[in-house]
Amino acid sequence: MPERRDLQFESWAEVLDDLTALESGYERVGKWGLDQTVRHLNDWLTYPMDGFPTPPFFLRFIFGVIRNTLGPGMLRRILDEGKMKDGMPTASDTVYQLDESALSTSLESLRGNIARFQSHSGTIHPSTIFGAMNKATAEHLQFVHFAHHLSWLVPTS
Image 1 (spheres, rainbow, N blue to C red):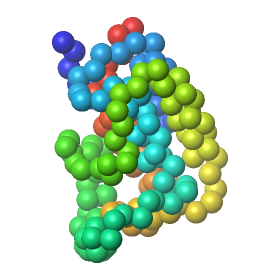
Image 2: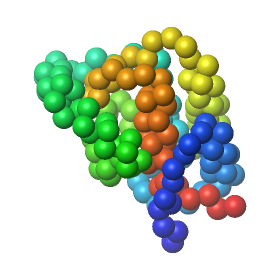
Image 3: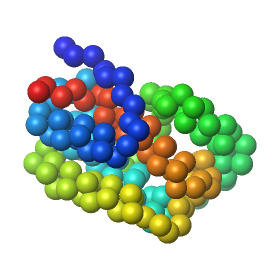
Image 4: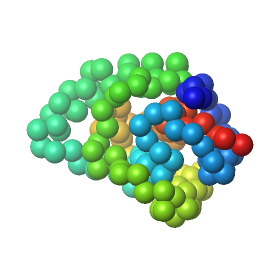
């Protein structure tokens, strides 16, 4: 059984190369398959460009407190360490059932949104947890997020 990979991405080209390698075959070391991971990453990649979903009413206050107290420090730690903690909760609507038959469509969508993010010159919408950030910071956070999830999938070729 393969072990989880220690991944770090510095460019979208590295991300795309890794996705291509995984598309050719992979072993799952975590809970999610490639399709689930790709759809989750695609959602979170579009939020800085299109706006984050509005959390349920009871979470808005909690997220606002976090954003204005712990959020900036959490973001700095994630970016400095280049790692996200395992088991962190995520929005339930970004967690998918495995559907490997949708993988090619999911990958096509993600690749298109990576290109869109790279050329995006508009507003970077503030994160519900971390708050406002510039494009370079949002991109760095995306690289860490991609590495976190893709590290659980090991290419077989």
